[in-house]
Length: 349
Image (cartoon, rainbow, N blue to C red; front, side, top):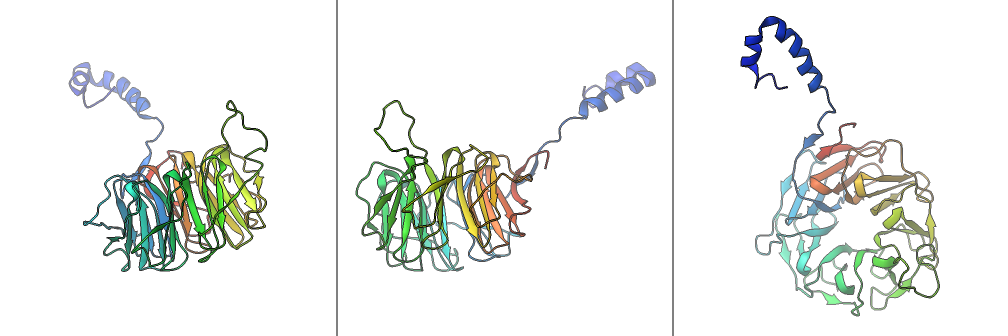
């Protein structure tokens, strides 16, 4: 019962009735608290890049590009008026605090050389969605996406050339250690590796998620992979459906599945120093304290309840994760605790 709606009735019933009814109203108001909201944007956020502890760029649906130069205390929206993407940017990558690139729907690629004050578009080579971009230096970068799209630039994004061969596959992520050595991951356990900057790609497989043998049309498809991360030319990880994290110590010649304690879809990860972090559906968070060799669901989860699509660390202490409904969370202690910068905090946090 709402006291304000029924105030006239309460007055008519008199003091005794008010004394009886008000406790009942108070009891009705005792319920699970509503989630707390901190809103910088309401857009779903898909990519984050943090070249140092103070500078961070975030991109997402609606052509959203957000930037903070003070560790997240204040934010500014950056736009590309000459070539807006109203639907989505899916990934962003910065080399230093001035040179950055974002990719998105309809094959859009935009770049900046002044920290995002202005964004410009290079030569467009595809109409397909581009889901990931990664640069090994200010000139050499790769973008991947739908229908086996692999694009490479050697001039900072002014022009792009195709390195794909028309494979009917979705490539979800790309990672390069240097101008020669890189990996791509995608749907159905797809993994590609190059040692010559993408002129030639070879396939890699993890038997733990793609069992060898004759294909059966009734057999469930292999798990898709959404993120890939390498610490050096030998040691790397890929992450994907069913809570899978796979691990290699020989550059991908052999991969093995690691126990994670979850079967939730996981999207992205990072490993730095002795620690590792991974995020996925429903705010799921995994961490490692032994340089990514074992993973577990920590007792203290993140202050997020929706999907988290990307995670990036500026150093071993400062990191960011972003996702659905404008979610932006930050850690300053290597992932032990996280604070909500923007989004909806679950009631029990």
